[in-house]
Structures are given as C-alpha cells and as structure tokens.
Length: 284
Image (cartoon, rainbow, N blue to C red; front, side):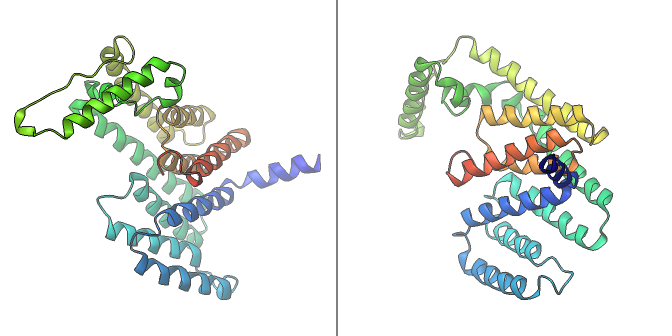
C-alpha cells in the first residue's frame, strides 16, 4: 500500500517527472551529436559541469538547462539546415523550462508547452496539405515500395521484402546512369492497389494529426485528447521508427497530462524510444 502511495505521489507532479525525462533524453541526444562542432561544445560541457557541481545549491539559475540550451544553439548555428525537426522543438522546450525556473507558474509553463505542441503538429498538417506529392499519395507509394515504411509489418509478408529490395536496387542502379539519357524505372507494388491505399493513408494521416492538434488545443488535459495523441505517436512508431521525434512529442504530452495511467504510458513510450536511440535503432 505504501509503495502504491509513493508511486501516486511521485506521478502527481508530472512537470517534475517530465523535466527528468527531458534531461535524460537531452543527455543522450547531445551525446549523439557531440562530434558536430566538438571544438565549441567541449568548453560548454566542462564549464557547465564545473558550475553545476560547485553552485547547484547556491544559485537560483538553472545551470544544466542553460548548458543544454547553449549546446542546442551551437548545433542550430553549425547545422541549421541539417538538424532534425525536433531539434527546434527541444530548443523551445528548454526555453520554457528555464522561464519556469524564474516565474514558478505551473499553468503558464503548461500553456507554453501546449502552444509549442499544437504549433508543431499543425505545422506538420499544413506542410502535408500543401505538398502535392503527399496529398496525392505519391510520397507514401514510393517510400512503401522501397521498404522505408512499415518494416515491422513487412516481416510477416516475406515476398514484400524481396520486392522492396528489388525496387531499391533498381533505383540505385538508375541513380548511377547518365540523367541526360532520360531512363526511368517502374516500381513494383509490394501489395495490390498500393497507389489507391497510399492516397487514403495520406489523408488519414492528415486527419488524425489535425484531430490530435485540435484536441490538445481545446482540451489539453482531457483523457480522450491524450488517448488520441498517444494513438498518433504509437501509429507513427509502427509506421517508421521516429524514436527521437516521438520521444519529444511524448514528453510534451506528459507535461500536459493529468491522468496517472496515461502518464505512465507516456513514460513507457519515452523510455522505450530512448532505449532504441541508445541502441542506434530508428531515427534519433
């Protein structure tokens, strides 16, 4: 009984738990990007650790969070056009945490996280709607036939793996030819009626993302809002192992969630994704 009470007490403050998981993710993420702009990052890490070790209980300034913000900023400056989309999200999340250390207003912090999350998901919806290749289903059609999506499910259809490999080999051979010759290839469908199914899946993706964004915008603490959002995250992970981005989205969801069971589900998703990132599985 005491153990259950301790667990409930710990999960009561989802902001504190979310910050701990965010620090864990940032530590892994920053380590994986450490080789980029190493000359500038090493002094930041050393100085940050020295200041944290000596002044963590003597100053109201969040030294660790400022260190992470600087490290993220270095990557933005060094590789602005190459960093992952969730790198920008992390930057604003860390900013929100730093501001929270000064204003101490939980509702204001939650509102900041809510706006970041809604803007990110809605931006994804707008980008898809404005892309002719996406709404037509051409994007899904090509990447599925090349074996880039639904790898988990393809294991149950061995012949689809062979077709996808054949398509990839043909595309690789085409890329080695002289483009002036105007040669083309035709991708073989790994399943029947894939072009039609791809278009349906494209619009289904847009619809689900839009519903999730509206749910988080209108009812950010509602259980159904988080069930829809969690379903979106899990759906993306089964489609493609976007472990980095889904970790970030799940941490945002955890910050907003008030249901203990759903908080624990968010934690499982986050820790599972971080474990896959450490094992270099998926896309961090």
